[in-house]
Amino acid sequence: MTTVDTPVPATGGRSPVRGWLAVLAVTLGIFSLMTSELLPVGLLTPVGAALDVSEGTAGLMVTVPGLVAAVSAPVVTVATGHLDRRVVLVILIGLMGLANLASAFATGFAVVLAARFLIGVSVGGFWSVAGGIALRLVPAEHVPRATAVIFGGVETASVLGVPTGTVIGDLSGWRTAFATVGVLGLIALACMLFLMPKVPAERTVSFAELPRVLKGDAGVRAGIAITFLVITGHFLAYTFVRPILQDDGIGDHMIGALLLTFGIAGITGNFIAGALVAERLRQTVMGIAVVLTVAMTLLALVDTDAVTAGAVLILWGLGYGAVPVTFQTWILDAAPEATEAASSLYVSTFNLSIALGALFGGFAVDGLAVTSVLWIGAALAVLALLVPVALGRQERDHDSG
Image (cartoon, rainbow, N blue to C red; front, side, top):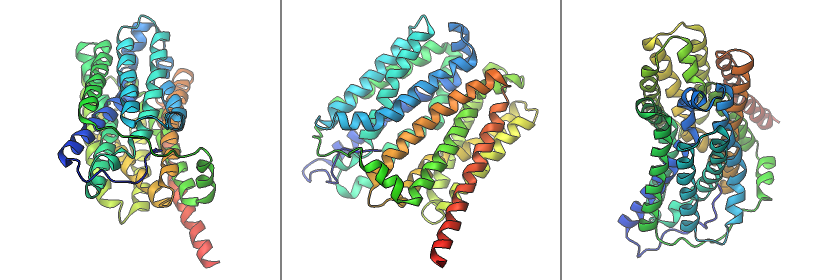
């Protein structure tokens, strides 16, 4: 998460309570943004049917914002380098809210894609700026916890935002789901306006730092490769989990509940990984790859009903829920002297992988079969498993040499 802020803690005179309220406002903003980016995962079928496009084409609703966010993360940060960070965050969250409301009233798929483009700008820019904002809001001793809370917004959106949006869509229609997220973003905007102090820009991370970090550290390169493989594989399959479940004969009324089960398992996976990464980081990364491989393979092989599908989605959720905290920790540990530049690469890779997963998953669904995305996703997870193995071998060769 490329940050424009210097590592200066919040001023001693500022109320910790006011600072924490500001942190919660930012967390609500990033939760609504990430939920917005991933919301179409649970709504592909009804949106495609309503706007007369195939499920593969509807997957562009995930591809477009992911691609745009991958670019906008560094670009927005550098372009707004002299603006108050509160102003930047407010503008970006407002843009997201209006874009979702436009989607809710869209009469054609082109309007939805234009709105999804604007959401990509918002997601990339907001995440990159918000990544280091806790440093400016709370006293120094509270910064680690405040940062964890903000990133918890990303995690919670990933594992709970989509299922909740799907449930809303099933009960009241997909337009209501988009409108709900848009209104949530506008509520976050109001909270930031009233609860955040001014946060003047201090400095920016230059574009020149990014290739230097990637070229100079094998650990960063490995972390970026693992992120690319796991996130691409996950979203290649998970974007189309609704039609996969429908092909197994599971009714629409059950899919929202199953995705909510996935989300609850994901929160559990996050806590499990949080307890493991300090001492067993590499093993946790490899465990994630194994769990995701097994889950996708089982869903492809087993003729599921609601119970067996729920069991597989619990396993899948445990694996994916562990991803953000584990991969972010890997990147920060690999580049302790260049955390801002390394994290910006991680944000761009994460969002690019979401986009590519949804894009190529759409090609596979339209050109092969719905279940093909599970096999491809599992194959990418297996490749991710090999990266830390290769890195360990390289480190041993270096030490022995």
